[in-house]
Image (cartoon, rainbow, N blue to C red):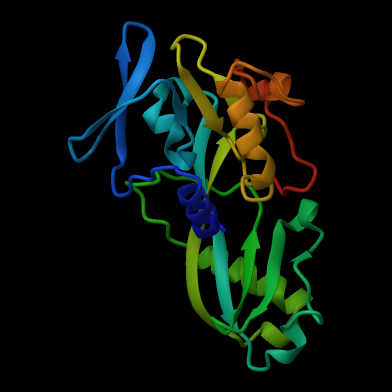
Length: 240
């Protein structure tokens, strides 16, 4: 999906500069005028949009009281008999996700696996400094779920694990908003596990915000001061 979007962007004249991780926002007074990168390059612009995913609260530390990067376990299992796990026999599934957190995808012939993951609390991680390691306790938890839900996968080979990164806002809502103190700076982040699902709408909402306009969820996604007591609970996410 990301590759298709990149190809489309290039086809309409967007210049995509790769391998240039942003180090900081360059400001002139209280106005954002560009970015500098870890390789020593500088890029000037008329408006900065930070859509940096899990790196957002590190690029803009003032967001750390309201936003953090979390890691959630993902498992690839190779079934002994893939047929029962192929679409349409097995669709994309959610297994009482509000009370278990478990969801997954049918057998993928290209990789020869089915993917199972947990949409839950996760653990706080740094996107660069921490290893995205899945613990033995996570594996045991997954095996327990599989034993109850997909017994035929109980002996399936576990071929790959990792932690999927979320950019969790404290209340679970997106953060698509102008910066309250830096002119010419818009933030588009805080996906809280919903970024891919909301992909078709995020660009439109972000563009409207950057252009000084509004959209249907402008009030919900604006810059807001949150406390632990204001933390939201998503109906389809298992949060302990």
